[in-house]
Length: 157
Image 1: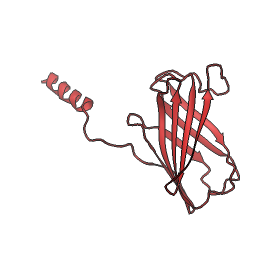
Image 2: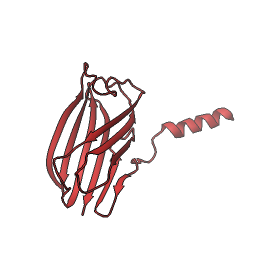
Image 3: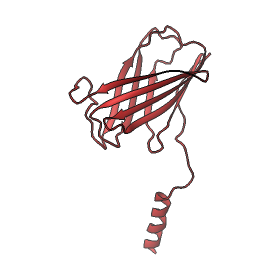
Image 4: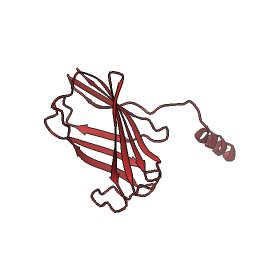
């Protein structure tokens, strides 16, 4: 009887059921600004925070992101794609780490390790203009394996 219960429980855990998405997380919500994100990686959700939550960008933003790595990350690069009110604006790609880089403590992490990125982000804008923004943020390792992926929605009124 125990074997049957273990088998049924194992099949339940390993067989795909409904295709569920990761939940939408609230980054911030104020009178003039709302921001939400959702992992676009079907295998992994992650944590993200950006502070302060303000429409006016006179200060730098503190960004924190945390994931458990599914692959080694000796080299890392990010790709950021931005759309405004449904119109594609731009894409930016940046190398964060290479093999000899020691600027960041998260460079060179191995599979299974917790990766936490704490960075200060500054913008060349003083205010987020009114509208709906959609950001797709991707983090890749040296093998072009996607370590993390997020869809971020920003609503400025």
